[in-house]
Length: 164
Image (cartoon, rainbow, N blue to C red):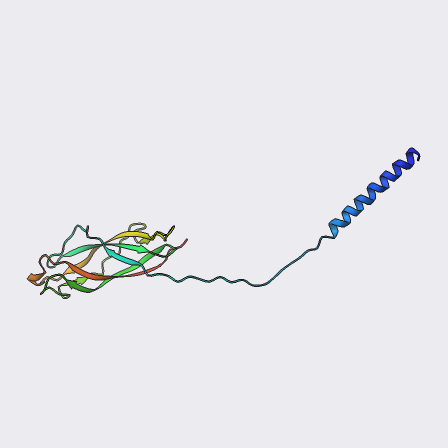
């Protein structure tokens, strides 16, 4: 074979390989898909309130006291407490009853983050200590039996998700 013929065969072979390769690229198919999926929402768990007895104020007739308590958040999202109330008062002393103390609808703690409770993380509930200043009052004519009494009551919280 002559040099020119060899060169022509090489050029034709390269052209066929190039066209064949281009044809393979155009042979790829475009695909689409559709269907459905689902996701379920969880349910909010109840916040847990426990007493904290380190409050520095005590009740006296006609006076107000601060109430300090711990809030535990078992939810996997942070919450913001929007309201706090007290109910179902009982006293450790006979003769001192629920008419001797009352909830005061005091201003909620206003410091930044004071009412935000972190989410449960790595199996550990988020917690927050809250001090509700001036929220409990002893009536002016409280029974003498209320001296030295310890009062127990329910702390009712209203909260909402505080997720970003």
